[in-house]
Image (cartoon, rainbow, N blue to C red; front, side, top):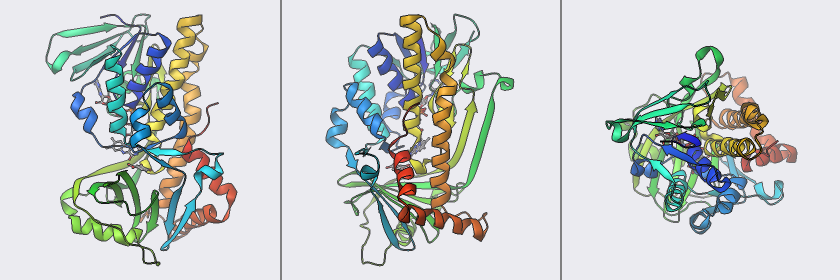
Length: 393
Ligand code: FAD
Ligand code: DHB
């Protein structure tokens, strides 16, 4: 098989890249190790930055998002049983975010790609990348995991294969530097069949720590609570989850959280991670393959899309004008934005979680940070600008 760009992974990075390349007239093939059903059903991120919403519309993929997504012009921060509204739209010249779950985005991207005749090979096994430091790199794989060995010959290989994929490891260890921070807490996420309890997202730090109230639809709500990352989900009965959500989201003004049946729950660890550089020879890595943020700032998915937007422009310059500078600068360009998103995600995470390993001094500094957002417009604006998505430069 021969194509211009071989993409490993049908997550947000791989699928957005395929759509961007299609629009530019550049050929590509995606291989994905999971089934289409698994990709379309895995519950992950929820918030789309302002410019990602615009990009979905530009690509002709925004119809369902506009119909079913929830537009938010602010978020609520909570501590000491008090709530504070951050006017995201007022602080960012009219920008809004949309709560539209990642797996819904992926359904729209997959359906769009297939209807345009694009190729996505699901369920592959044995993915291997080779000849990256030559002009003709290749990806080997087996259809359905066990089929005959097949090869995609291409000009460029894109590792959009997430944190555990093989692409990052294909950069020789001596040529990459990895920066990592593991947090001593995880998130327990639930989906519940219940009506909305509040009109916007609430991020709170009270009682035993962090909780987040988000939404999925008028009758399905998404909530998270800070927990021990090594904890077993079996230790969390529904009653215990609700008790913790009530404690962390409770206020002094008589507001109450509406409960419902919990139909999905799981625990994820929190980490920050960056691999530098994001390129080796003809391999370019994008999204979670190159960096991880803790989810508190809702940046993971958005950052993956940002990488491939930069990459699509660079590939366009190479193919249309035979100019390689943008490709050479890909890693540096992305990393400038990546580190700012890492900073914001770390700031939101440390400010909003209770960390027993920190001193009382550090814990109080986090509440001072929260109160600064309440009392200082500059501080609130900084949070808002980061939340809706930083500009590209
Ligand atoms: P991925 O979405 O990981 O996609 C990579 C794809 O590559 C996968 O489909 C994988 O199956 C495929 N792949 C891997 N190896 C191979 C191989 N060898 N061959 C072929 N294909 C391969 N972010 C938030 O902002 N908020 C959240 O609440 C949130 N929750 C999350 C919960 C979980 C459990 C996880 C794992 C992540 C969460 N994130 C969240 C992060 C966000 O979902 C990611 O940042 C985003 O999915 C990154 O997109 P990606 O395309 O780079 O990687
Ligand atoms: C959701 C996830 C996040 O990480 C976040 O910051 C806000 C919302 C969600 O899944 O709805």
